[in-house]
Length: 397
Image 1 (tube, rainbow, N blue to C red):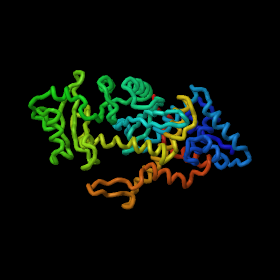
Image 2: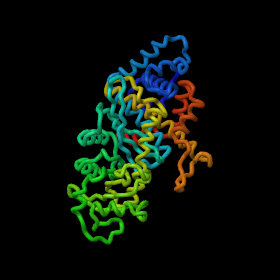
Image 3: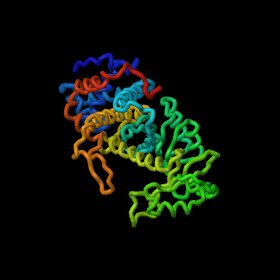
Image 4: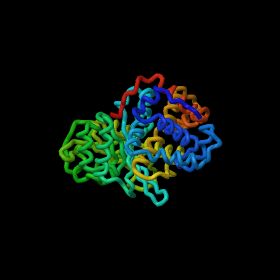
């Protein structure tokens, strides 16, 4: 298929050759159509995408492997360009990215005796976590404090994250880590394991007229109060100092917990730089969106666990490709979601309302209606970019 990539589109890819840009879109469409990142699956749909049924399948496979064997520097530039285009498009969906939450978590799996631990940072747009930086730690278990500091420093070399609020689960803790985030101007709400920092919390007691905190209560007293029906929704809080920096320690009832579950899971323990406990509790609920993101990248979307490329730069590029597709699906889902019908939502007993189908699923299903070949795919992205100003780095510096 002879296809010209217009100047508007190539301008986002800087000095990268047009042939490489074209191959990028071929592989993007291949992953989307095959629902897998495994190159052995992608090669099977290329004849249809390229409208070329005479070329040998193995020739298509060699085309794919040559793409991932590009020089590392070119792979890095290409990954960065994909991030830039995705974020520019998201800027059209949500004008002010500066007030967004961030989510941090890792997803781990084993493939062909290779252990992948993808530490991932996302930005939250309309309640959806969108990957903006990641790194394969190639290890079992949790990331160390040192690994997280190194990871975040790399992310900060590409993004301005000052003023955002990071949401993370209980393995992402550490005194130096908390101080680092504070120094970088990043707010956070991070879950703690039961008993962490108990000594510091018990040591700081004082009478206070501040309705947000119970300064006179020790750790056990805070737990007891949090279990009271009066505090099930709003929780209890106490100010505490770690490394001479003031934080808010919050305990709230875990609403997913029921009688018979593990006792240690009855309460949620949060550590935050926010000054309002209710705001911290509400913000932490958004953290779950990164778990939904991982599911969409893997079993519900593009089978990321079947990745069969090796090497840091190759893995980073593959995740960039999948994240770009995920972003396109979310953007399309948000577009459709502007006109929600009653059947598009679910009403729960507690009065909360959620989508019956995620923005990602809505968008993915809709895109499958008309993205049949490479021409369709490139035309679709070009149209999305028509209303966007000449390339600017909304996030990527």
